[in-house]
Amino acid sequence: MRMPGEDFEVPVSITLAQAFHGTDIQLNLSMPEYDASGRVRRTPHTVKAHIPKGATTGQRLRVPGKGGKGFNGGRNGDLYLDITLQPHAIFRPTGHDLYMDLPLTPSEAVLGASVEVPTLGGTVRLKIPAGTRAGQQIRLSGRGLPRPRGGAGDQFAIVQIAVPDSVTDQERALYQQLAEISQFNPRKTLAREAVK
Image (cartoon, rainbow, N blue to C red; front, side, top):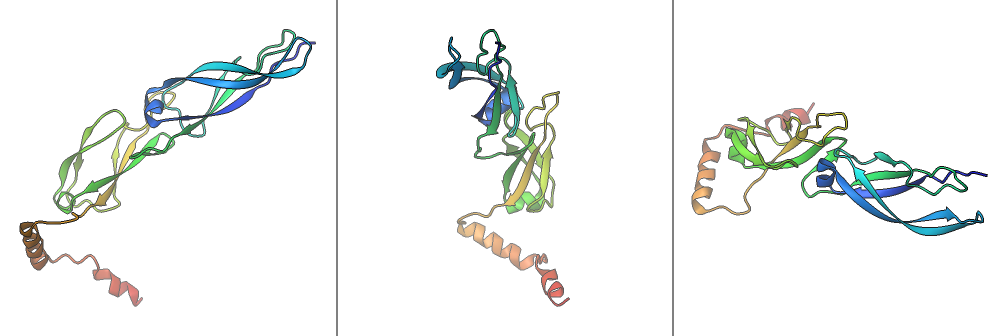
């Protein structure tokens, strides 16, 4: 009697760079297999598989015929790869979009600037508009992970205002001068809202 082979699932963890470019992997698995008398025994298997670019966490990729061997002429089962993206030092993936924190100096945020920003495809220059606020998201269109049917997700730079750990005497004097002439009060609504 013919019996088809079993389908198997294995977890596969890949880097963001591998997800961006696509990658070939080799899995060393131990799979149950029927012997000539129909008994099941575990045998080592080496499986090579291609993970296409744009694979994301939660995706399930089918590798046909690479599961358990069929018995008595039955078809082989399939192997399913459960994809997980490894944590990255800079980027946080959500689907095909990428999020990152972008530190700016106070003067860059106030005056605007052109800054270098890393992407998975290389460094790009990003225009920071004058008056940019902390927490603001700046979109880099098409700089996320590739989509299976073409195009790509976006990359979002979330602005963080960074202050220096230490300043020179000259810098301190300039900050002091700015504090004395500036009319800006970021807390002006706090007292009014507190009594409502």
